View 1 (cartoon, rainbow, N blue to C red):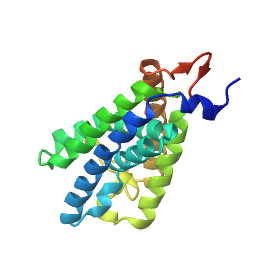
View 2 (view 1 turned 90 degrees about the vertical axis):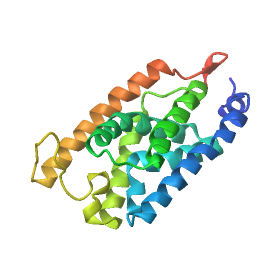
View 3 (view 1 turned 180 degrees about the vertical axis):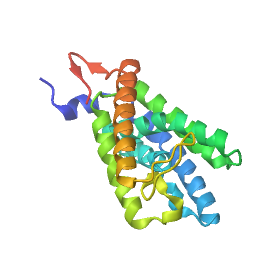
View 4 (view 1 turned 60 degrees about the horizontal axis):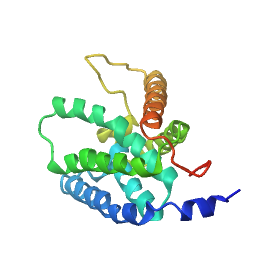
Amino acid sequence: MQDTAEIIDKNPFLPKLRLLSVLPLVFFIAHLRYHYNQGAASNIFWMCNISTLTLSLGLFLNKRFVIRVSALWLTLGFPLWIIDLLQFWETPITTFLVHIGGGCIALYSLKYIGFSRNTWLYSFIWYLTVQQFCRMYTPVFLNVNLAHSPRSFLGITINNYFLYWIITSSLAILLLFIFSHLLNKIFPTPTLGNQKIP
């Protein structure tokens, strides 16, 4: 039986995707510069934004696990971004680079490396980690990743933050699970011989 290193070495996707890693990094830096100039640099820690950076790192370092987690958050975040876009019409061009450009590169990468169904769990753990970081180190008024206070949705406001956190976290798990299974159906893990490439 071939070991993991041998399987990975025989997968020809690496050089092509490593070159692509430059684009999401450029998108991330451009968006970070915009938020910095607006005096709200901490907004770069929203899951979609930070996933553009992790996507770049995953592509450059050939870390499929990182690419898949980034791709899941960029895919899940896209419809949420559209809702925000319709609600707040004034938006910088760099946000299109992050959400559309980054999302397209993520999906293109999955064409070569496939997707793993259990990515939803690791993505949720990553979300909780980033959210707690935002709770400790980002300004309250920005409420990055809903880390500080409830946010109204469709005119509904939940004043108890712990209850709000339970509801939104449960919804995040459900959506991550659904999107993870959809991506796994669309981008099954490629095989080499009789073995899946990890």
